[in-house]
Image (cartoon, rainbow, N blue to C red; front, side, top):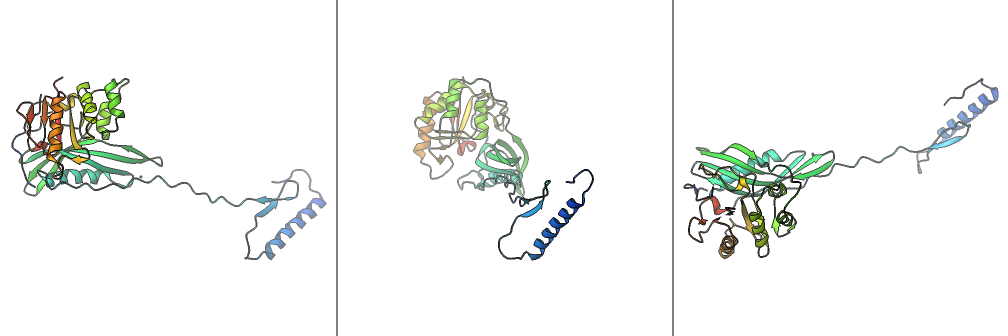
Length: 316
């Protein structure tokens, strides 16, 4: 089913010799030991240290190498991560802060690091919300740092003390496909399409429809697009309704930044976002939503949930 305007939203705020012993050999051994002892008694504490000596099997002396001073290499350091901050233009900054801080607390520790790429609404009502938190992660494993990332659908309710996290649902893109379409391969290679880890894994799974992928490629000729959510990590139902979302079916994608400008940023030119919305419609999206209403329903819609991103859905 299509995404349509959500219900009314809140606007707040990691060695011994063998055989018989001969006297000559005994005298030789005593002499060697005496010389060694004399040398030890006459060594001074100044000057460079000399290697120690020991008796060899033939009765001579051989240098003993000093102990190795090579220490094992320290483990690879985790990256420094930035603390996410909301936009003052957000519908409810406190709602997003509650969601993001919960994930930052869980994801940052002695052997792990988490950085939030973007946080957008999956839906927001008066006293309940879904915040989709797009993350990159790093984990120290066997002395190496392994990168990764997920998108989390964080559910919240609002009470007298403000917003409270009631559930966290991680994205599950599924395994990589053995074969991908040409469009999928091109999207994964295109530098002007910024895919966070979960969205990239969605494309690699082969479960994103070509109509979504070819639209991304066409847009990338004109814009640098920051994709937030494709298939996984999004609510199965349009938040607050019983209608199925296009996202889990691989028939939609969301954009959180255009040419490096976050959609939610008050400084992002309106004409940039409006032009992007219209370009999506021209490229075949029949369900275009964002902060501005640029055409008639049902193709176009705008609501509080889509104040911070652009949605593009496809029927086929």
